[in-house]
Image (cartoon, rainbow, N blue to C red):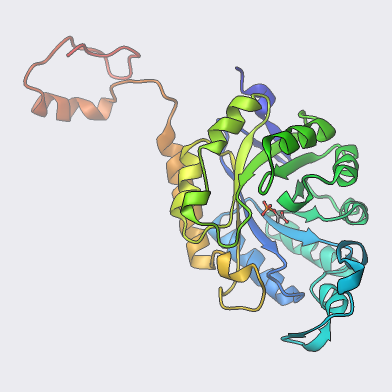
Length: 308
Ligand SMILES: C=C(OP(=O)(O)O)C(=O)O
């Protein structure tokens, strides 16, 4: 198996085995429709060393079932109908133009998961490096076909999906431009339902597709384990404060945690190495001091070192 066909272009970055893990801070709708919140979240992602921030883009009239439009609910902005609320947490074209400029200025990618085909057309007005398919949209062939037509890398999340549904979605999207993400779609996801070994199952089943991880757990250890298992792309929801209004906030990572997570991902990718057993130059002094039976002496860095 070569790795070259498991590499994907995301703007000016190449993502895949042997390349730095591409880390995405999923803002989703944790900005609560407030551009200042979005900028503060972008700042946190830049500060942490993320490669991208991500949003969710919906056309409310298409994504909200008609029978829910008029249901009233209490929100931080007063009592309003559900359709008004969905509009309240959506950014318009001017907002995204401001986000685009802000991300360019701070040298961080942004992209989004469109939840309907109008949202695909909306996002295509911008120079986004990729599109994402949320797990909930994996069975939406019309959306997948619209995304395939963009020619961009499509990141496909696989939460709440069967192997057959995933195979069908891959067929509709074509495997050449996609990156698959293992995910469990519960918020927060429990450790015993993360099933991180599915990352290896997907690697085996889709040898020509890079495999990543989109996490909704609390804590960071399991996301780091996903990287150790070979995830080449990582996405976690981010928030300014887990106590903020919104259904995704509680299962999101705050700025300090995000910085720790990216730092630890970089250490893990460095420490995974190339898998070739060798004796390091730096091991020679400890070897001299500690090893009683010398064995066959090998040069530092040789592929087949000492027999002991
Ligand atoms: C919900 C989303 O993705 P995931 O299924 O990976 O959480 C999304 O990208 O909007």
